[in-house]
Length: 268
Image (cartoon, rainbow, N blue to C red; front, side):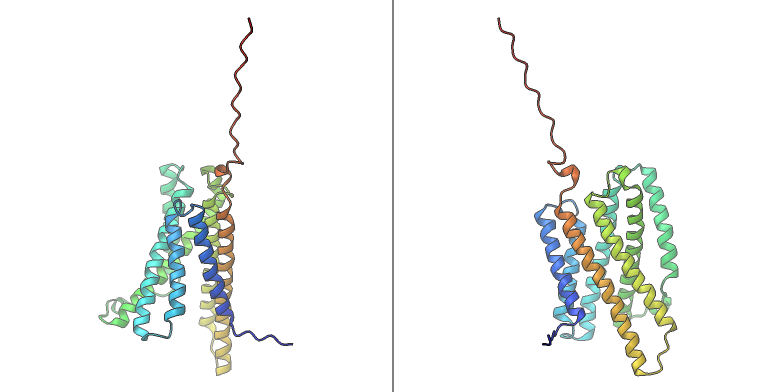
């Protein structure tokens, strides 16, 4: 007996990701986590909207119109992603001194500047300032790519900082802030690894036939599917961790001391 499935790996991963995001939003709202992490919640909403838009609008509109919609959503999502990093950093190191925060920001800025300057090409100034719709779309795509790379590097740096020093500033392993950051940095590492591997393949690949070209493109699809699998696992991690109360916020973990009973009055 043969079972025939009409769903591709991309469709299955899309369904799992979208369903996971919906469950995560229910947890964030139902367990009152959205109040503590509003930008993280907004980021999950934008991710779900982008997934839904890609499924509902792709191939059903003119290419230029759909590119404008998708790139506009991507730019907004990238900016929101940066605000998520700021929100989690402030939450993790709220008790750190101003000097410590400034030193950490400067170190992160230097690391990000070096990576952004050397990873990926930069178009010429003439291309950036060209007065055409296509040039505007290319500029929006470049801005999205660079902000996404910035967010990924910051997520990895913040993840290392929180894991190494979070306990000192009330952001231990069982805190929601560190658990969110761990998931965010894990997803960022997967995305950066896929991007780096694919760039190496594209630089050295020289297909001599259509079969070789299709093999290379199939490898690209497998790489991006692997990154999507990591994202699904990260979403499941967030659902489980955010459903459970932090030790400091769980009444059972911090029982109140019993009130001593008053001593009996002496009898005459």
